[in-house]
Image (cartoon, rainbow, N blue to C red; front, side):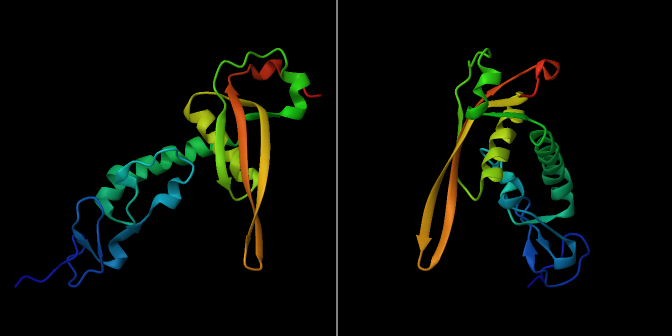
Length: 164
């Protein structure tokens, strides 16, 4: 009978198993990740959905994807946003793309950031005609709001934007 050993440090009785290579890994050699680290992506690749990784698999697959995700998230925070109430500013812009729809977000900021993330992924730098809708959910004595949002993605010239 062979004893299980950690892939990295060779200690006996490892606690976890790498989601990609399925080798055993001890707690100190395990990289923890999961879908929550990529929550704004529309479709999360299967290789990024595991909870535990060995160092080599994390460095090869998850690390670069996480870096790209964080860079995209930073860019999403810089997307220009024009609400429906600001339509006077955007009335001359052509809306050629179908609007993004996001549903069941925890708050307005999350809904907006998710749409902005989609815009950056699709190489846009603005969202126009952004609107929000909330729904109240009551579970026992706990009440909360869930937000839906929509917005049309487009590319605008930053020099041509003037504030109201």
